Length: 328
View 1 (cartoon, rainbow, N blue to C red):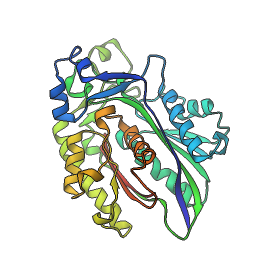
View 2: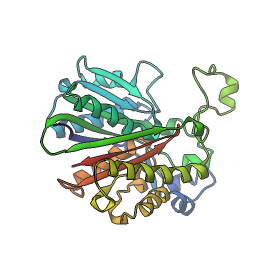
View 3: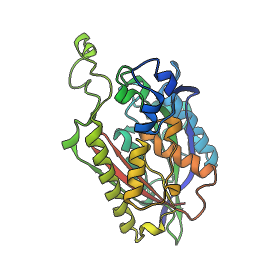
């Protein structure tokens, strides 16, 4: 039996910390208001000279080191991002150059917050088919470049960071690593979360910039309800598909969108709060990078142990949603 085993993980967040008290000086908000509605106390902000590929480079180097691999051992690099370095070439190609990874396949995917689970789904298929041996899946986001710092409903939520995983082909009679991934999209809800300024849709113009079209726009209420419902549904699907029940779950490592969403999903699944990984208070919503960052922190602090069953649900713009079930 071919398995897509997680051989290494890594994460990187920028040095600059932006606290809620710092935001009080930028926009009409308060530390209490932000924490009550999001659970966030601070977030990291990329330096002016840091591109998303730079954040990805640091996370990827840690993942490669923990896997005991060299960049030249990689057969594929999948970068999951909605904030690429530039429109093209892909951020994956910039990362490939910085890693000196040779001529492996390298490309970006865009599923916004769901990007990492979508990337795992692609890598899982290549590994389990026997086509490739080692695949780097890395999510990297510099959300601070596309938020409206005058919109308190969004600028308080997002942060910058990168998380990475190395999936490797292994043969075992027991299923380990990525047991399955389950991904969905519904473009009917594309207006709930978007960055409406389109490079293929319209030219960059003074009028478009003045209309503030190139920043995140979000309708929080409907998004909250859909996130809880879809993340719950797809979590139950992943468990049923693999013959497990909620009682078998050791950890839920969800997308760190909002502490209230994290709590609501845990409550719907009847998972004790102490089994739900949450670090949103430190990093905010790092979009696609939030799950691999949390996964790296929980494994490296020995909270997640060998043999544990881990559920990773997510929802993002698109709408996109999904879940990965992992045996560590």
